[in-house]
Image 1 (cartoon, rainbow, N blue to C red):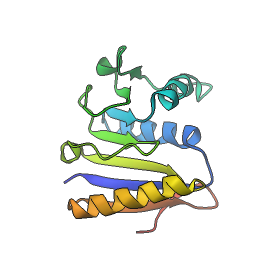
Image 2: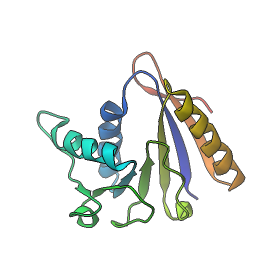
Image 3: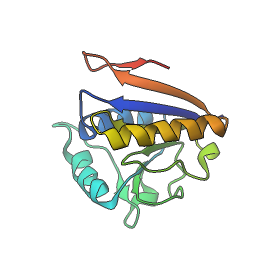
Image 4: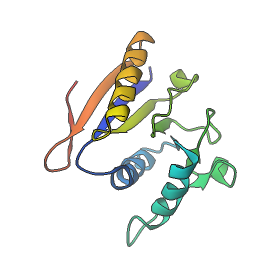
Amino acid sequence: MTELLFYHLQRAPLDKVLPGLLEKSLQRGWRCAVQGSPERLRALDDTLWTYGDETFLPHGLENDDGPNQPIVLVSHEGNPNASAIRFLIDGAPLPPDAAGYERIVLLFDGNDADAVQDAREHWKQAKTLGFSATYWQQSDEGRWEKKA
């Protein structure tokens, strides 16, 4: 069954949190898809190449080499690189093929009231559809703690 994880960003922004989550996913052998707005994806494209002094995350955009990469950045539904895990950002909706993933991670900005409301709606939808959903929040030290 697909796991849905809700990550409530309060202490660090998306561009600081997402690379670490992608790294951990790749270490598990999972291919990844990140779904968000085209503007955010262009910024993430740059971030993923330069986020660490000694490393980068191999990835591509949906219309470029993305389907051949372990991480693809997409602004639409579909799974062009056969991802096991899908990250939803910028209020991206649960994909119609949600049951086909091992894990879906919805990241939302806790300082944005609209993003929090969207996450609540996604939570209700996930529960209605019968998915196992968990809620994670950042501690003062920046670690993720399961809250629900």
